[in-house]
Image (tube, rainbow, N blue to C red):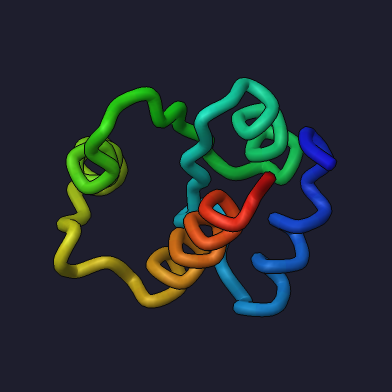
Length: 88
């Protein structure tokens, strides 16, 4: 359970992702705490447009572009987005 970083750490290890190039988007403070506990960046999603938020975040992080996401970052975003959609 959040803010435990267990699920995040498992995904980072499974997909061999660099923590410095990953982040988590969540809709609760516990999501941000989980990201912090996993030593990745965390961002609060409090709007209706996830794509705009991701583009804003990527603009802040190394000027990455949404269309050119590193595959590892895209993978972890998909993992957490699916988990978000399937939660109770």
